[in-house]
Amino acid sequence: MFDNATGVGRRVGEAISTAGTFERFAAHCGFSFTFCNPRSGNEKGAVENAVGAVRRNVFVPMPRVDNLRAYNKRLLDACMGRADKDHYLKGEPERQLFEEDCASMLELPARPFRVAKVGSVKTDKYGDVCLEGRHRYPLGPEHARERVGMELGAFSVAFRTAEGEPIAEFDRAYGDAPTRASDLLSQLALLCRKPGAWRNSEVRAALPPGLVASIDAMGKSDRQASLRVLRDVSAGCGYEATVRAMDALAGRPGGVNEADVALAASCIANGQGAIAYDDEPSLSAYDAVFGRGA
Image 1 (cartoon, one colour):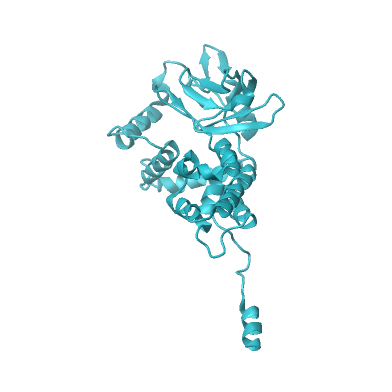
Image 2: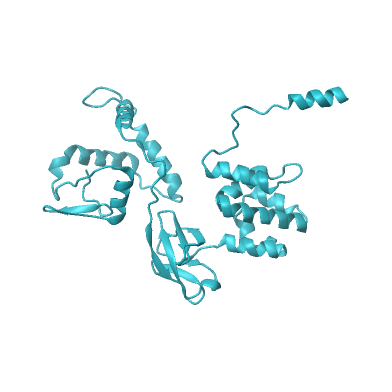
């Protein structure tokens, strides 16, 4: 049951209208829904009181949000922390009751629902897309005055050609101040051809300090090879996961190779965080052989 949330839908008398994205989300997850009667707070007093309690205990003082993903995690932890008490009516721990509710629910689909506004936009003469009248996303001059597909999510915005081929994906910008996104992948492709521009590049400025120090210490050919690994693995595993993988492997004796970075980045992209083995690898057999030879 929803309280006429704008992004979900609303009820006017007996007529119910729902947002298209929400309808697809409900079909994807397999649940039914209905709406409260408008201007009828008396029908849901317990919920209204709970909303007020969360507002006073979690949102006071007014929070400052620099990273929405990180704040959502802190907010969830704070709400779960409020469940460490007994239910006012049932006398059982609220967290336990919540877990029992979860156990009785349907399983979530294997593939998550991608919440995004899908449409098309036209680039300007420079190949930029301007959203909300102030936030610019550069797709490159080769896409100037071109109509491209757009997928606008809460955290990112992605663009595709009319044929559906990916062009670029950026972190979504918010706020009233004009912004221009940095197209690091396009700059990375240029750096692979002209590694001499590394020192003053936006790619270098955006990488973790440990990875920057490692690449700074390389010769021109090794630096170019590392940048190519970053470019090529990013195409399959994503830029963020590849950067984290290369940062973890930076400074390793013998340097890094594409296979190692791709394996580590794949684990990170899939939420595994690190390479995991069913059985821990053992080098004892090699130790025995080399020891015997000595």
